[in-house]
Amino acid sequence: MRKNASLSRFIYFLVILKILIPYLLQSHYYEPHRDELLYLAEGHHLAWGFMEVPPVLSIFAFLTNLFGGSIFWIKLWPSLFGAATFLVAGKIVQSLGGGKFAIFLLFLPFIFGVYLRLFFLFQPNTPEVFFVTLMFYSLIRFSQVKKNKWLYVFGISVGLGMMSKYSVGVFTLSAVIGLLLTPHRSIFLNRHFWIASLISLLIVFPNIIWQFTHGLPIVHHMELLNKYQLQYVKPSGFLMDQLLMNLPCLYIWIVGLAYVLFSREGKKYRFAGFAFLFVLIILLILHGKNYYTLGAFPMLFAFGAYAIEQLTLKRYRMSRYIMVAFSVIIGVILIPIMLPVWKPSKLATYYQRVDAGKAGVLRWEDLQNHPLPQDFADMLGWKEMAGKVSRAYNLLDTEEKSSTILFCDNYGQAGAVDYYRKQFHLPEPLSDNASFLNWIPDSLAFNLENVVLVTDDKGEMDHPFVLECKQAILVDSITNPYAKERGSLIILFKGINDNFKKMVKGKIEKDKSIFK
Image (cartoon, rainbow, N blue to C red; front, top):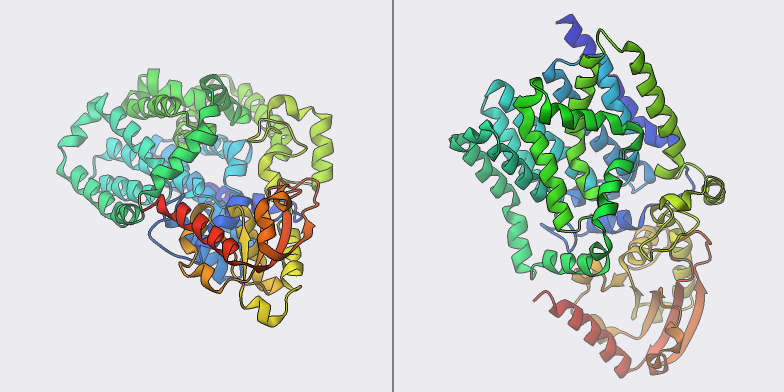
């Protein structure tokens, strides 16, 4: 009993450490990420669904906005989900009979490697990974104690997971296949499993209704992903990334996979190993991105940490020091790649010095190398943009402002203006990109006289429609050399005519018609 209490205290100490570490490492120079700005905007428009994601993250966005929207609150939620994921994985280790060394090994992937970045960004991946880990933990506990309450935990985890990110369906399907391929298939004869499944469906049901009443935007979103991103994912690159993402702790999850697939003791949990393999197979077929698999790794880290501890209890004790030293050394080297720990100029110099471009960490969606990773470049230039939009908006008098809209080409620009609009006394921005499309009023063009446009089209001033207004003023552009939005233009169109209004209204109606 005393041993379990000591182990629990150790776990909770590491949980607190996991919450604090991102705050200690991140540079305060950086702003919210492009995607974070979108999710924060969704917190102002609570609904049962959005163009890109289910609704769970918007609840935390609402709370963040309610508490002032500072970086502290934005980063708190992913830190908490990361700590909770570690806690659940730690409970897997405890259920197996693991000790402090196993828990310490389990902690390493959460502070070194891809999970350091994952649980730094306010994105739906963070609750997704937590609920998937909880889902597998519930199945592991049911296999150990055969108590039906764990089936209900499973059902609730699946439901809340699906309300966080639709890709939880891949993990659920893989878990079902894993169960079917082992003696645990008897679970499907248990009525409590089906009641739990019904509970899961009831949790997801409001989002299903929302999808159908809004023209199934998830289908359109997946079509865009396949067209512009997923088609470029190569199977070889996808599989290699599974090794590289957790490079400092690679040996832990590989031992965990071997433990559940091949060891006599781990045979009881073979369904988890099969589930992991089917996650890989399904995502390979669907051309999934490398990080789509991350929900499947915490359970493998738990199994691996336990197995390594057992293997080194009496023999190979020295190997413990070697393994930990490997993880710490490689992990520390990779920290500047996982988190923006320094200002952009210092980071860019570091990447040049270590030739990080060869490893692909500086490659953006345009398949070209840049000074910073795309995620870090997506955290720069937003306040500059909002300030310059304010400058353009304030070129108008009070009467002109009443018939003016702020329009942005993409959701990052719109999210940035929305995030900073109180500070710069701006109206709510509009965009026909992502979920912002849903928030454009149908009566938009009737009282429209002026437009402040934020665009990443460098040739915007050369388009014929510029002639459809009395005055077009190129006010400024984004100059931060490291920002992904560098070169984006802020243009003021004054005195637009009926043809211009018709063009704006027609474009928005066309975009909205896809979802009718």
